[in-house]
Picture 1 (cartoon, helix red, strand yellow):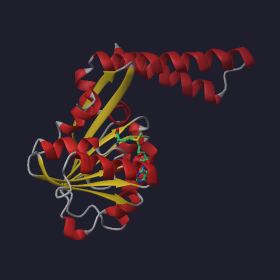
Picture 2: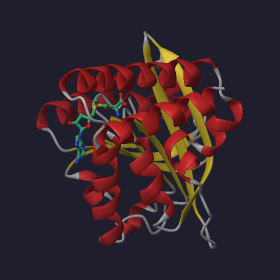
Picture 3: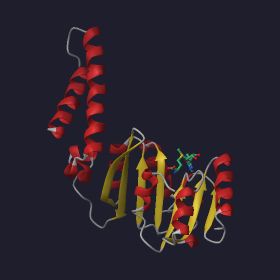
Picture 4: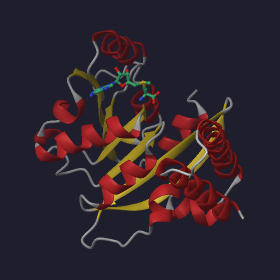
Amino acid sequence: QLSQRLETVAGFIPEGSRLADIGSDHAYLPCVLANRKVITFAIAGEVVKGPFESAKEQIIASELEGTVQARLGDGLAVIAPADNITVVTICGMGGDLISKILDSGNKEQKLNTAKRLVLQPNNGERKLRIWLLSHGYTIIDETILEENEKIYEVIVAEKADETEAYSELEYTFGRYLLKEKNDAFRKKWLSEKDKYQYILNSLQKANKDLHEKEKQIMNKIKEISEVLG
Ligand code: SAM
């Protein structure tokens, strides 16, 4: 019933969780998890009226009015302390937007009770990892998968007492993904390398001298080549 992408996210939600799914759209994820009795309560947060209405309809159609609540609001503003949220999911958005949502929610202390964040950025993973590690989180797991010709990363983070040291490579490629280097990982980074190579070729055609920008891109290509081996 869920896409493989959201099924992967669902796999990281512990039993008995109280979930806030931010940017929930149709509220598929919270409804399926409530039907499976994995979660005991969920907020389906939406900032846009149309998807918020779809979430409400889905909750009614699934007869889950007692367990899943659609709430209209920006990011984590839909969470109240009494909700006692234990897991926050933010999926299907850019990493930049996810970082912004986490940042403003963190300042408003909306993440106080949430032990775990399960995030599925469509891009900007490096920035998101930097945000997490500089805000008292540790990344406990990561997955990369391909579905319908698209590659998705899922990042699972939990509050940590101690800050972890991450290398530049780990921020860019992901500590766990780097260890595994599965097919989806190789495909993503080969494609990134091709994109950089294309940009480099275009720049080299335009200029005779090697400029700073070209050097940066060459370093990126070298870095990816070394990781892929
Ligand atoms: N999470 C679902 C998924 O992964 O399939 C839906 C992803 S959909 C592409 C992104 C949703 O996030 C849209 O419905 C959009 O309205 C919502 N959204 C974007 N910015 C948001 C914000 N600041 N707060 C709450 N929802 C937001």
